[in-house]
Image 1 (tube, rainbow, N blue to C red):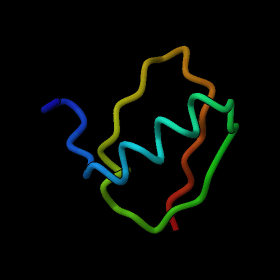
Image 2: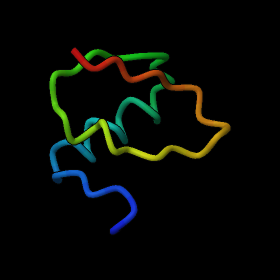
Image 3: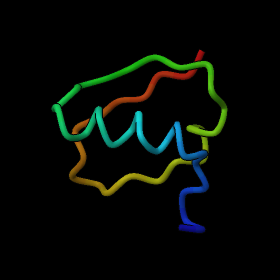
Length: 48
């Protein structure tokens, strides 16, 4: 849990995106900046 300190709502959004095969999403939430994903994950997060 310390590896990716996302708020519960952020974690839920990430889980939904991964479960449904979303290829990318755009967010202004800076919590995603520190996110460390498994190398095989096919998800692009674009920070604006």
